Length: 81
Image (cartoon, rainbow, N blue to C red; front, side, top):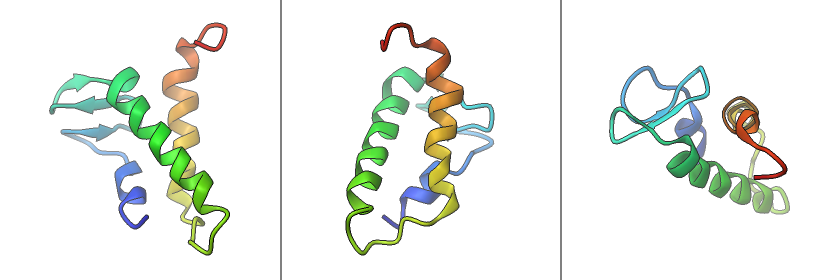
């Protein structure tokens, strides 16, 4: 749980999420529909499960999951796909 917020923090170079909602992996390859989607799905599942425990899920950086989904994936979805 402790590593999730830092994973969601926007980066300025290399691997990770960028402020514009993009996700790069392997230094400079856009992978939002691959690795990025898998990562967001995994984090969302962990956060959902953690809400029903005593674990602290109040870090405001967790809200970045919604931000990345809305900015990066939703614009490309059509009929749920």
